[in-house]
Image 1 (cartoon, rainbow, N blue to C red):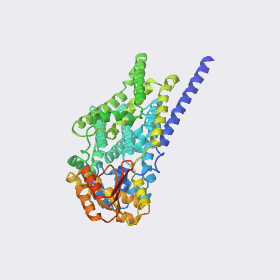
Image 2 (tube, rainbow, N blue to C red):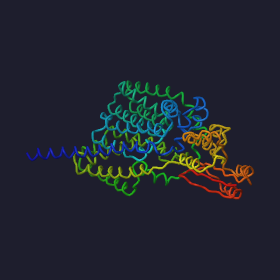
Image 3 (cartoon, rainbow, N blue to C red):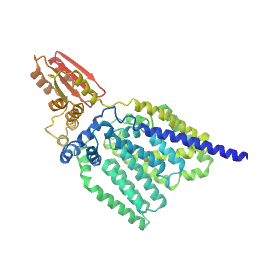
Image 4 (tube, one colour):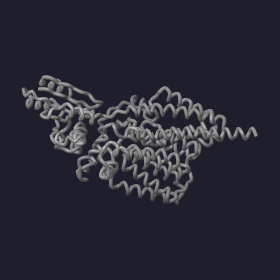
Length: 507
């Protein structure tokens, strides 16, 4: 009887812990919808929303897709999506929030063939409460969908290599998820190809499985062929090569990005996890065998091979930014989840309290981070100008001349032109959203150069005119141009708005 009561209490305790993990997972999913609207779009979001809406397909292809640093899949999706819904913050961000929730749900309910119950709960908890997972679920960028398909491809690969079988369902799932990755991100394309390559190595002595893998590889290659040109553009023109190396900043950003922003707590938690794994392995031979299972060896191989590729590439290219390493995040988090499930099994309630405390703390940190989330305030700078300008005041946008496309600037290596050529369209988008259609049509672009300042000074000197110049996404007048502008005006006010500026000039 005492044993029965003890068993009932243990089962009840496990149910309470499971429900607590479930509540935290649900909370993380809710955070993905916390800031869908009410906060204006930032530069990268405007890039997609403005570029994919209200324009013919060939114009979008020529002026937006060709100069993009990513494959065209995300743009193509939004070209269709924004024909069905308004091009507003909520509707533009909604698909990414849904993709984020689907990724968590897949880990929780769709991985039974590969993960144990505890592993599924902990993997879903990590994904649900990871800052970068939440952030990109709230952002019009391809990374939320990329994380979803990377998770599906990785789990399907593990299912195939562990069982050494590949039925039609697994083959279709792996091929489709790999193609989705290839259409979303160049690094993800490499990751997908790596998974297929590792399958060949795993089945090198199995003729039937080699043939099945070859069919997956052929389908993947044929599906990727139509967009291979975009990889050539990326390699030929090094679209992102302007970024500086800052390895210490990259390393410091990994914990806050992939978990949450509390470095000391996180370091302590990882130390506890390591100690827990060591203690469990020392005390339980079965745990040692499980941790070194075929599935886990394949998972570590994925992390090692792709991580090695990224580190090697980083020797030649400035890729040490957390977003570029997102492709490896699902596999790495699966590995951490498996280790945590081995060290702190939920049926042993006093141990499972430790990861529960970790995720509860993470939930509090993430709520504060997301609730205070700020974007580049293109919308607020437009509101400021509309509230304060007089009808006769001219309004300009600091950017690049629109007589060339983004791809034209890219071909001549003009990085500023590549990014700044869109600024006029971005501001027009928000002026039109505010009903100021005439103001949007009258907007003109000026370069952030001293020559441009001299042209403005010659036009407005001694006119007593007031003009506004909008500057978004960190673009601003250089020191020499700013000094010339000060000397040419009677008064100059600069209003900063979270990575955007508004210059108010009185001549």
